[in-house]
Image (cartoon, rainbow, N blue to C red; front, side, top):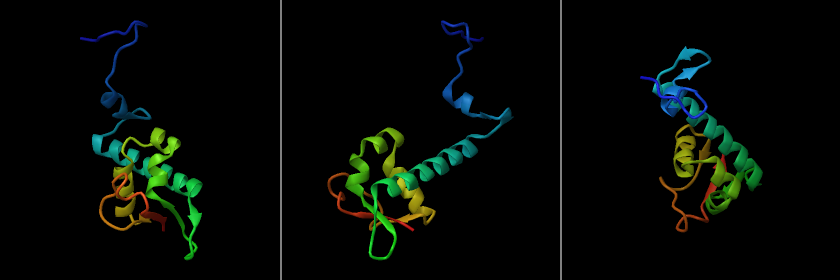
Length: 112
């Protein structure tokens, strides 16, 4: 059964729509991986936009600045998750395992 919208277009779930990439069937893992890589790329751009060069010549930004920035809030569904993924890929570094708003606002997020 196909359900049609008010515009006589088939209603397709977001997951089903994302499973088709350039006319090819793509599994959920590949779509998720592409999304994470895209968000990490966006994170790099935001760190460059908001950050300053530190004494080591690397760009760093305080977690609180990233977290409270309106543009970052609109870009990232889960900023902390994106930060963890980027740290796992050794693209960024920060002290600790997890950053929380308020508690870790003064922790430097450093672009490697």
